[in-house]
Image: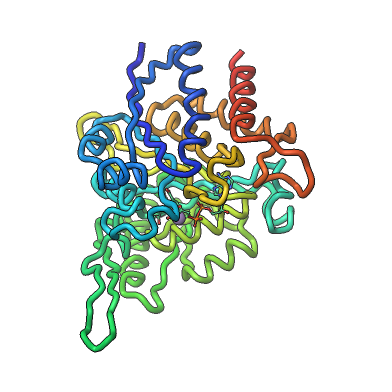
Length: 370
Ligand code: NAD
Ligand code: IPM
Ligand code: MN
């Protein structure tokens, strides 16, 4: 039997609720399909801070590093709003991304046909939408130094964040975008702000040169990131793959989430470079949404983003392409049947709980396997 190690970090808020629905799939795949997943579980975020004063322990960092893939729920919440900056829940996620060198964050935004009416945009704008945002995840203003608040001594303070990009960081994320575009509609749009930021100038130059040297068969366009946000809302179907930096990618993917109907729909994969010997990539899979403190503990969370993140894990970490396709098909079928958590339901329409949605997807997945 295959041995596939998964390290689960459910986190805070709705993270554990969504993760429970993936656990059911893992159990089924082990028991009935001989998938051979070996799971271990740790703590990240506010729960880890409460337990050991850090957003992730060294022991759990080691387990995350050793695993074939990490499944991550969500972190954060008002309970930890005033904890010191370096140990706040989000620091656990940032450390995982940085230490595991997960530089490539794939955020697909797919509008399932059944949900075209759930978007805040007109159905014809989003129907059939299938775009992929590639967000650079280990550089830029998230990690640049200096990053500090200085007391100027005159009753004033100065806050500094630093946006830094080196050529190699831009080249490797552009390479991921061009490679993936070749498996889709062969179009990449690069977004930056070269009109005001030096990093935008370098980003644009490097993407252009890298394209010319290695990927000139792919169609490349450039857009200023603010205009890109506008175009995503105006006519998102013009895009295939979007490649952008860490902060713009964070914002643009939240915008893209609403095109699909809800933040509760958007999965993501964070990948490292292939290992020189084994070709394996370090990887973490997580929904784009956060811990949703406003609905945590109420059984209202939509587990689809987490389940679809697991489908990405099957595809990118384990090459279980048929199973990944089947799981995504199960999600689509459940939506076609009109099964809805509150975030994607039309006003007044009946809704199901997190657990019921997970059960429905598992049942559909089983039916498709039969
Ligand atoms: P959020 O994504 O947690 O919630 C935004 C809105 O979307 C809320 O109204 C929430 O109810 C809704 N929502 C999100 N996921 C949903 C789901 N699966 N089903 C139904 N509705 C859903 O963002 P926020 O409120 O800005 O942040 C809350 C906390 O989460 C903060 O501490 C933030 O730092 C953290 N956060 C964590 C991650 C992560 O762990 N990857 C991502 C974003 C935000
Ligand atoms: C995301 C989140 C994170 C980010 C936070 C929680 C650190 O918003 O994954 O989109 O800003 O990258
Ligand atoms: Mn975000």
